[in-house]
Length: 287
Ligand code: C2E
Ligand code: MG
Ligand code: MG
Ligand code: MG
Image (cartoon, rainbow, N blue to C red):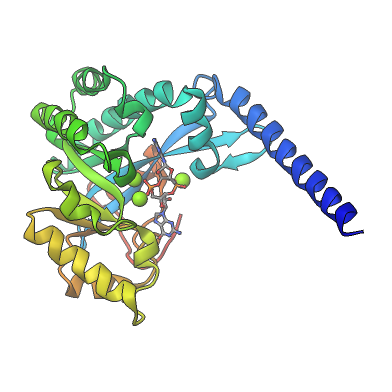
């Protein structure tokens, strides 16, 4: 009896796995050419200076509006794109699109930056640095207005190679930020040899604020340690005023999150945040 149940269970497990594999294979096929078909675009989420709540920049985030499935989250397709190599092409397109978009913003606000996520797969390509230089060249965006976000996991264990690449990228004039930071706290001292500009605190830490607990102490410690190393700090996933206030009291430099603004397409972003009378109303997650 138990053996039979186990067998059925296994069969069920296998068929769900197959099902997922089939779905992934289908998504993978549909992912190819999705950018050319105009299904994938780039959204921009505002990043604010915590001290004065002014806009300082925005993070470019992929958005796939699938003809059959509707909006497909990056969490559901970036990993697939990385596995099948599509991320290289996609990553280059995002880089160029974000640089061109940000170039427009600078007419209104010459101090803004655009932050672009870089996959570990892209980082490992020997021509990545050239790609960045090309995107800057073709868009006319000043290098200082481009921040590249690399993940902690892409760097950990490969600090020496990462240090060489990050140094080359910074010589172009772009900034390098460590995304999803905090999941490996020991990382910050370990990563000292990689000359980054700052860290983005993972939103799983921010989500726990300001309730008492380990995350409270940890997030405060990350901010202090980052500052003592001369690094900037962005908090991700700020969803409440209480979280924002807590971060301000701890001296966090910049913040990003639904409470401050959701990702918007380029047109919406410009309409809301740029121009003569940007209609900024903090605390309402409109749009
Ligand atoms: P990420 O780089 O950490 O981006 C932040 C994610 O947090 C975004 O999710 C954003 O919409 C979400 N977020 C921002 N504020 C809040 C908040 O207050 N609450 C909550 N719950 N979420 C918030 P998104 O757009 O789904 O992207 C997920 C991840 O996909 C990104 O995480 C990034 O790792 C990856 N990704 C997105 N675009 C690209 C890209 O162009 N290239 C690469 N390689 N990866 C990308
Ligand atoms: Mg998104
Ligand atoms: Mg990011
Ligand atoms: Mg992140």
